[in-house]
Length: 320
Ligand code: FRU
Image 1: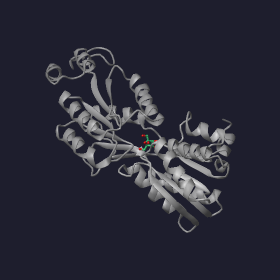
Image 2: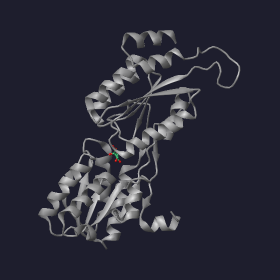
Image 3: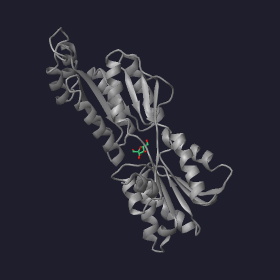
Image 4: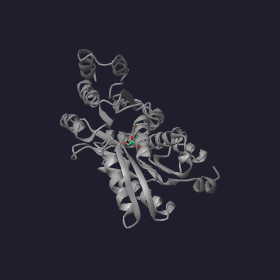
């Protein structure tokens, strides 16, 4: 793999990657289980690390990769929620000649081309969580966002008795999960008397959700529930209601998505959220499938992971 080290050196690759490459065993024959096999370099571009769910995804990838450290080495990049930075990161990984790329893209359309460029160079790409446009990637692993939206809709119908005014705080609408969570929710509430009286693109961000909810509260005296596309937004909405000082946070029901033990589940336990829906990070699966791809095995084009609702009742039932 000497040529790869050479490319790395001239393209000002990260010191870590150069060091990693230097340590790569040659792919000659050898004795024990892992001896004689080369170590593969995987480049992982995470769209941001500002949200707990993404921090958890990185931790899950790290934990899974650690179990195979005799076979793979993962190089982490944080795009800091900037599309152009993430485009460059993919291109850097291509230049560095990594063996496989994992990407959790910020937006669908702008990341499609860099990923296609990697594919054209023969570098397999696993896309996590937010889908790209078209199908020029090796495989996609994610949750079923339309189903999550639908489940959230059914749940809303149930807790409001089929009737009420809802505020929808959407995720970034140029990312597929937000589109699917919105459309699924509409399907879920179809046929009921639930009305979405206010909606806004909160870009997955708690401060944006808090600001938008503040304006919804000032415009609408009658709000029964909030459907937020993620738990940070649901929490932001709760804070806005609390800060208004009229006690409306007690009568409004807040539903979120992600269901991390340290975030959404905790909010449910504290009575802040009525419900959250688990959104798997796909970190462990990304490593599992990366190994299969590197071993030359066939993998499915799509792996869709299930969700489940978390409420006070489900927590009590599970005794947690
Ligand atoms: C984190 C996040 C999660 C959400 C996911 C959707 O960046 O906003 O809260 O479920 O992305 O892609």
